[in-house]
Length: 230
Image (cartoon, rainbow, N blue to C red; front, top):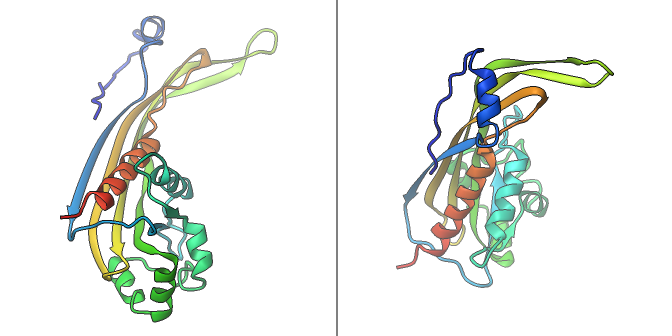
Protein backbone atom coordinates (compact mmCIF):
# COMPACT_ATOMS: atom_id res chain seq x y z
CA UNK A 1 0.00 0.00 0.00
CA UNK A 2 1.31 3.45 -0.89
CA UNK A 3 -0.10 6.58 0.71
CA UNK A 4 -0.48 9.68 -1.43
CA UNK A 5 -0.37 13.31 -0.47
CA UNK A 6 -3.23 15.58 -1.55
CA UNK A 7 -2.07 18.61 -3.54
CA UNK A 8 -3.72 22.04 -3.65
CA UNK A 9 -1.96 24.33 -6.11
CA UNK A 10 -2.73 27.98 -6.63
CA UNK A 11 -1.81 29.93 -9.76
CA UNK A 12 1.03 31.63 -7.83
CA UNK A 13 2.50 28.33 -6.75
CA UNK A 14 2.31 26.73 -10.21
CA UNK A 15 5.69 27.85 -11.66
CA UNK A 16 7.53 26.79 -8.50
CA UNK A 17 5.85 23.39 -8.48
CA UNK A 18 6.76 22.80 -12.11
CA UNK A 19 10.40 23.83 -11.70
CA UNK A 20 11.15 22.09 -8.39
CA UNK A 21 8.77 19.15 -8.28
CA UNK A 22 8.42 17.91 -11.86
CA UNK A 23 10.99 15.15 -11.56
CA UNK A 24 9.72 13.83 -8.23
CA UNK A 25 5.95 14.02 -8.76
CA UNK A 26 4.24 10.82 -9.82
CA UNK A 27 0.83 9.27 -9.86
CA UNK A 28 0.50 7.14 -6.75
CA UNK A 29 -1.92 4.40 -5.78
CA UNK A 30 -3.51 3.04 -2.61
CA UNK A 31 -4.69 -0.58 -2.65
CA UNK A 32 -7.16 -2.26 -0.29
CA UNK A 33 -7.77 -6.01 -0.51
CA UNK A 34 -10.35 -8.20 1.17
CA UNK A 35 -10.91 -11.95 1.27
CA UNK A 36 -13.89 -14.02 2.38
CA UNK A 37 -13.31 -17.79 2.42
CA UNK A 38 -16.24 -20.20 2.53
CA UNK A 39 -14.42 -23.50 1.97
CA UNK A 40 -10.97 -25.04 1.53
CA UNK A 41 -9.42 -24.97 -1.92
CA UNK A 42 -6.70 -26.68 -3.92
CA UNK A 43 -5.98 -27.55 -7.53
CA UNK A 44 -4.37 -30.53 -9.22
CA UNK A 45 -1.65 -30.46 -11.87
CA UNK A 46 -4.09 -31.52 -14.58
CA UNK A 47 -6.76 -29.01 -13.58
CA UNK A 48 -7.40 -25.46 -14.81
CA UNK A 49 -9.55 -22.47 -13.96
CA UNK A 50 -11.76 -20.32 -16.21
CA UNK A 51 -11.86 -16.57 -15.71
CA UNK A 52 -15.24 -15.13 -16.72
CA UNK A 53 -16.37 -11.58 -17.42
CA UNK A 54 -19.53 -10.21 -15.89
CA UNK A 55 -21.89 -9.36 -18.74
CA UNK A 56 -25.33 -7.82 -19.05
CA UNK A 57 -27.81 -7.10 -21.80
CA UNK A 58 -27.42 -3.35 -21.15
CA UNK A 59 -23.71 -3.50 -22.01
CA UNK A 60 -22.65 -2.71 -18.44
CA UNK A 61 -19.84 -5.25 -18.55
CA UNK A 62 -16.55 -5.58 -16.71
CA UNK A 63 -13.90 -4.08 -19.00
CA UNK A 64 -12.38 -6.57 -21.45
CA UNK A 65 -8.93 -5.05 -20.87
CA UNK A 66 -9.17 -5.93 -17.18
CA UNK A 67 -10.29 -9.50 -17.92
CA UNK A 68 -7.35 -9.93 -20.32
CA UNK A 69 -4.98 -8.54 -17.68
CA UNK A 70 -6.27 -10.87 -14.94
CA UNK A 71 -6.06 -13.87 -17.25
CA UNK A 72 -2.47 -13.10 -18.22
CA UNK A 73 -1.21 -12.33 -14.70
CA UNK A 74 -2.94 -15.32 -13.09
CA UNK A 75 -1.24 -17.66 -15.56
CA UNK A 76 2.16 -15.98 -15.24
CA UNK A 77 5.02 -16.81 -12.86
CA UNK A 78 6.21 -19.84 -10.95
CA UNK A 79 2.93 -19.88 -9.02
CA UNK A 80 0.85 -19.42 -12.18
CA UNK A 81 -2.33 -21.42 -12.74
CA UNK A 82 -3.47 -22.71 -16.15
CA UNK A 83 -6.33 -20.46 -17.26
CA UNK A 84 -9.03 -20.80 -19.90
CA UNK A 85 -9.84 -17.33 -21.20
CA UNK A 86 -13.30 -15.81 -21.16
CA UNK A 87 -13.55 -15.92 -24.97
CA UNK A 88 -12.48 -19.57 -25.19
CA UNK A 89 -14.88 -20.54 -22.42
CA UNK A 90 -17.85 -18.82 -24.09
CA UNK A 91 -17.05 -20.46 -27.42
CA UNK A 92 -16.62 -23.88 -25.80
CA UNK A 93 -19.93 -23.70 -23.92
CA UNK A 94 -22.00 -21.92 -26.56
CA UNK A 95 -24.77 -20.84 -26.13
CA UNK A 96 -25.07 -21.16 -22.35
CA UNK A 97 -22.76 -18.24 -21.50
CA UNK A 98 -23.82 -15.80 -24.20
CA UNK A 99 -24.72 -12.33 -22.79
CA UNK A 100 -28.50 -12.85 -23.04
CA UNK A 101 -28.44 -15.92 -20.75
CA UNK A 102 -25.06 -15.68 -18.98
CA UNK A 103 -25.09 -15.90 -15.16
CA UNK A 104 -25.21 -12.54 -13.40
CA UNK A 105 -25.05 -13.73 -9.77
CA UNK A 106 -23.76 -16.58 -7.61
CA UNK A 107 -27.27 -18.03 -7.57
CA UNK A 108 -27.21 -18.17 -11.38
CA UNK A 109 -23.90 -20.07 -11.23
CA UNK A 110 -25.51 -22.57 -8.88
CA UNK A 111 -28.49 -23.03 -11.18
CA UNK A 112 -26.41 -23.49 -14.32
CA UNK A 113 -24.10 -25.98 -12.60
CA UNK A 114 -26.99 -28.45 -12.41
CA UNK A 115 -26.97 -28.75 -16.21
CA UNK A 116 -25.40 -32.17 -16.79
CA UNK A 117 -24.09 -31.26 -20.25
CA UNK A 118 -22.23 -28.25 -18.88
CA UNK A 119 -20.95 -30.09 -15.81
CA UNK A 120 -19.71 -33.10 -17.79
CA UNK A 121 -17.99 -30.86 -20.33
CA UNK A 122 -16.22 -28.91 -17.58
CA UNK A 123 -15.04 -32.11 -15.95
CA UNK A 124 -13.72 -33.48 -19.24
CA UNK A 125 -11.70 -30.27 -19.77
CA UNK A 126 -10.35 -30.32 -16.22
CA UNK A 127 -12.00 -27.05 -15.19
CA UNK A 128 -11.94 -27.01 -11.39
CA UNK A 129 -12.92 -23.40 -10.66
CA UNK A 130 -14.88 -20.64 -12.33
CA UNK A 131 -13.57 -17.20 -11.35
CA UNK A 132 -16.29 -14.65 -12.06
CA UNK A 133 -14.97 -11.08 -12.26
CA UNK A 134 -17.17 -8.05 -11.59
CA UNK A 135 -16.21 -4.39 -11.26
CA UNK A 136 -15.14 -1.21 -13.02
CA UNK A 137 -12.75 1.75 -13.08
CA UNK A 138 -13.97 5.33 -12.85
CA UNK A 139 -12.48 8.83 -12.94
CA UNK A 140 -13.79 11.33 -10.38
CA UNK A 141 -13.09 14.81 -8.99
CA UNK A 142 -11.35 16.27 -12.03
CA UNK A 143 -9.93 19.75 -11.43
CA UNK A 144 -8.01 22.34 -13.41
CA UNK A 145 -7.61 22.71 -17.14
CA UNK A 146 -5.11 22.67 -19.99
CA UNK A 147 -5.09 25.17 -22.83
CA UNK A 148 -3.19 24.47 -26.01
CA UNK A 149 -2.47 26.72 -28.98
CA UNK A 150 0.02 27.10 -31.79
CA UNK A 151 3.04 29.22 -30.83
CA UNK A 152 5.39 31.12 -33.11
CA UNK A 153 6.59 28.88 -35.88
CA UNK A 154 3.50 26.74 -35.81
CA UNK A 155 4.60 24.57 -32.86
CA UNK A 156 1.90 23.51 -30.38
CA UNK A 157 2.22 24.79 -26.80
CA UNK A 158 0.12 23.86 -23.76
CA UNK A 159 -0.21 25.56 -20.38
CA UNK A 160 -2.14 24.64 -17.26
CA UNK A 161 -2.52 21.97 -14.62
CA UNK A 162 -5.03 19.12 -14.64
CA UNK A 163 -5.65 16.62 -11.85
CA UNK A 164 -8.15 13.86 -11.12
CA UNK A 165 -8.80 10.92 -8.85
CA UNK A 166 -9.35 7.44 -10.23
CA UNK A 167 -10.92 4.44 -8.52
CA UNK A 168 -10.86 0.80 -9.56
CA UNK A 169 -12.91 -1.74 -7.63
CA UNK A 170 -13.15 -5.40 -8.70
CA UNK A 171 -14.47 -8.57 -7.09
CA UNK A 172 -13.85 -12.22 -7.90
CA UNK A 173 -16.33 -14.91 -6.91
CA UNK A 174 -14.69 -18.35 -7.01
CA UNK A 175 -16.96 -21.29 -7.83
CA UNK A 176 -15.82 -24.88 -7.26
CA UNK A 177 -17.10 -26.92 -10.21
CA UNK A 178 -16.35 -30.24 -8.52
CA UNK A 179 -18.40 -29.50 -5.39
CA UNK A 180 -20.92 -27.06 -6.91
CA UNK A 181 -20.31 -24.46 -4.22
CA UNK A 182 -18.93 -20.96 -3.89
CA UNK A 183 -15.62 -21.24 -2.02
CA UNK A 184 -14.96 -17.55 -1.54
CA UNK A 185 -14.96 -13.95 -2.65
CA UNK A 186 -11.97 -11.67 -3.19
CA UNK A 187 -11.79 -7.94 -3.84
CA UNK A 188 -9.15 -5.37 -4.75
CA UNK A 189 -9.81 -1.63 -4.57
CA UNK A 190 -7.27 0.78 -6.00
CA UNK A 191 -7.39 4.58 -5.66
CA UNK A 192 -4.99 7.16 -7.01
CA UNK A 193 -4.34 10.78 -7.86
CA UNK A 194 -3.10 11.75 -11.32
CA UNK A 195 -1.56 15.00 -12.55
CA UNK A 196 -0.87 16.59 -15.91
CA UNK A 197 1.24 19.76 -15.55
CA UNK A 198 2.00 21.61 -18.77
CA UNK A 199 4.48 24.36 -19.57
CA UNK A 200 4.63 24.11 -23.36
CA UNK A 201 4.65 20.28 -23.20
CA UNK A 202 2.09 18.30 -21.11
CA UNK A 203 3.79 15.74 -18.87
CA UNK A 204 1.31 13.21 -17.43
CA UNK A 205 1.84 11.49 -14.07
CA UNK A 206 -0.92 8.90 -14.13
CA UNK A 207 -1.98 6.68 -11.23
CA UNK A 208 -2.62 3.37 -12.96
CA UNK A 209 -5.36 2.13 -10.68
CA UNK A 210 -6.74 -0.54 -13.02
CA UNK A 211 -3.31 -2.09 -13.58
CA UNK A 212 -2.63 -2.06 -9.83
CA UNK A 213 -5.99 -3.66 -9.06
CA UNK A 214 -5.32 -6.31 -11.71
CA UNK A 215 -1.95 -7.29 -10.24
CA UNK A 216 -3.34 -7.35 -6.71
CA UNK A 217 -6.40 -9.44 -7.58
CA UNK A 218 -4.41 -11.90 -9.73
CA UNK A 219 -2.02 -12.54 -6.83
CA UNK A 220 -5.02 -12.99 -4.52
CA UNK A 221 -6.62 -15.53 -6.84
CA UNK A 222 -3.45 -17.64 -7.05
CA UNK A 223 -2.81 -17.54 -3.31
CA UNK A 224 -6.45 -18.25 -2.48
CA UNK A 225 -6.78 -21.27 -4.77
CA UNK A 226 -3.35 -22.81 -4.15
CA UNK A 227 -3.08 -22.04 -0.46
CA UNK A 228 -6.43 -23.20 0.83
CA UNK A 229 -5.77 -26.86 1.68
CA UNK A 230 -5.90 -28.19 5.23
